[in-house]
Amino acid sequence: MSHIRIDNIHKSFGPVEVLKGIDLELEQGSVLALLGPSGCGKTTLLRLIAGFDPVDEGSIHFGQKLMASSSVFVPPERRRIGYVPQEGALFPHLTVEGNLAYGLPKCANRKQRVAEVLELIGLQDFGHRYPHELSGGQQQRVALGRALAPDPQLVLLDEPFNALDLELRRSMCEDVIALLRKTGTTAILVTHDPGEAFAVSDQLAVMMKGQIMQCAPPETIYWQPASETVARLTGDAIFMPGECAEGGIRSALGVIPLYSSCPVPSCHNATVMVRPEQFQWCQNCKGVPAWVTRRSFRGDHTLIEVEIDDMCLSLRMPSLTTPQLGESGHLRVLGKCMAWA
Ligand SMILES: Nc1ncnc2c1ncn2[C@@H]1O[C@H](COP(=O)(O)OP(=O)(O)OP(=O)(O)O)[C@@H](O)[C@H]1O
Image 1 (cartoon, rainbow, N blue to C red):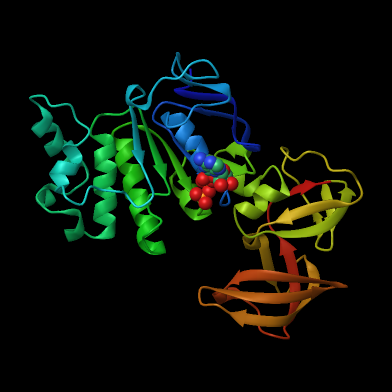
Image 2 (image 1 turned 120 degrees about the vertical axis):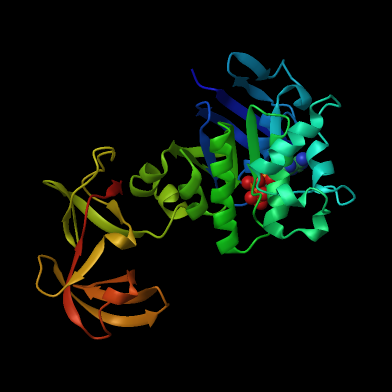
């Protein structure tokens, strides 16, 4: 049985329907990443799960227990949830220990629990410091520790590393998720960053305009997106026209095999999606003749424009293997693809 189950959640603010029938399930101890553009309703969904706002329709179960529906509302303090907001929001007048102890009941083992959490977040020597005496990454670890201290059954992380630069954000996120896995805590992470979502989640839910477009393991989302929209939201993708053929879709790059999960597209006007890493440039291989008409070096990758027959493709290739401007050769697609009518 799933640990957290969300069925057909609807939520409106005034006349605007922000969540339009959300279904999600999480297994005990798993991490779900919620990825979607700004304003699609990610924070609203987290707030309903946390119990900060009531749902209009649908239900939220933790195990067998109904937490929210149109007629039931369990208040946040009885949901055993840890919430890590954007930018941590630590109390500036409290030390690290004070922040960690804040949500704990005043009982005998309070001090011991603070010490355990300090060790868990790797800040044993920082208990007496104030938030302004910590780096951004350390502050976020304290924010996570504060959420974990009361031993929650679910942790909600709302873009908690936004304020950090990309490198630090990704490594912090991986550290934090490793911590959550160590404690077996079920978690939902909201993020704008597909790389972060892919790296840390068991399931990735792609959200758009108040709906879940697809929820699946990260590799399935990347290679077998359910729609063009999901493909665009989760990384670079090239879309080409094609038509049905034996063994797949016939395109300007030959017949490309399709994943079995692919809904069979109509034979005409199909669109096939190829990820940039699937293109291979070679001199004497089975591929279609092509030549490079533009080239722009970007460090670890190079952008090129390639002409094939009467079509022009913009590709991102690893810099070490990118052909030169004016070079001709052959281009082929490796692996399978998705296509839609
Ligand atoms: N209390 C509220 N009253 C009215 N409208 C609201 C309220 N809370 C959120 N909204 C609206 O609901 C929509 C979804 O907001 P939400 O914060 O859930 O999006 P988000 O996906 O988390 O965005 P971001 O990634 O920018 O944080 C937005 O149009 C927002 O203006």
